[in-house]
Length: 266
Image 1 (spheres, helix red, strand yellow):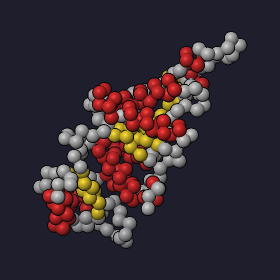
Image 2: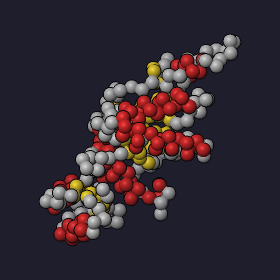
Image 3: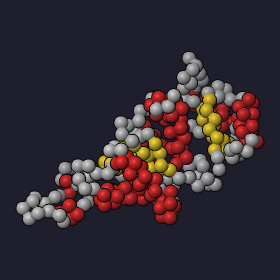
């Protein structure tokens, strides 16, 4: 199903906005429309408060079941800047099946790593700490690092887990003496050592980075978007179009719309 994105100030929302949505639906080009009020219109000196415009938009489109009004832009009140290396947020449903992950995520993740490595670029994956897709992605990427690292100082990619509060819902890696968590590949590294070489310890293994302290899932997800440049995500179109994963994708589209130059667009 194609989803149309309708950006605007909606100050106030009016029948003209409704007609635009109805025209898009009647054209059969899209099956649903996401209405996205701007937090701050760059081409207007002043506008009504975002909370007012969002509430009025919800009321205006309330009778249209194929329309969802998103408040995703309130998380983007300030400018967002992508990282200096290709950085991908991996997100998805909590009830994703192993088969879905293998079909929709594994090829995309591996393709990103291969493309970056072919161009001699580093790449980073950012994931949350929810059960389901987040945990599957973190474990897959950590295992990929373990199986494909020849030089401990140059792993094929970087893994960073963003989490709620002081402790994540799950941990990937083993705690080292240096205070960091590491991908455990001590046995693999020591297997090829000469007799006189000093053995590797967990501290010598690639680090799994953690960023925490977020009070809500939305705060965490917004920070992940701000720290990255692209998304790898899968949505079940019939039931999950208004999910947190869909909101992550919307947030990215909003960032590209507001800050095209940071994404190499004109």
